[in-house]
Length: 95
Image 1 (cartoon, rainbow, N blue to C red):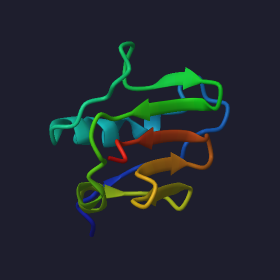
Image 2: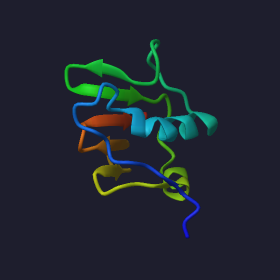
Image 3: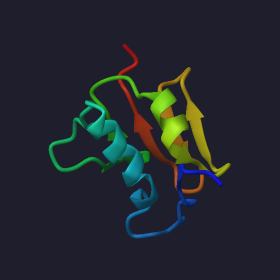
Image 4: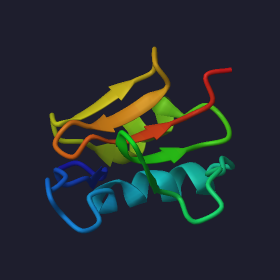
């Protein structure tokens, strides 16, 4: 039995399509990172909903704490976590 937090798949067309990713952002913030938007962690731009983090994402922590569905793509090479169902992205500083 896994003690990791299970993240649900995002719901296309949901009013808050980023809701399933909030626990990841909360964990990143608890680990010392900060989101950069003045209005909240997620904001909508021309490409959809996104969360920009001040520092690089802690992919080891994400792997350790969370069980992600196949629709959520974790990409250390790009510094992102992308929910392909909703096209919501969390992006860290690429340095």
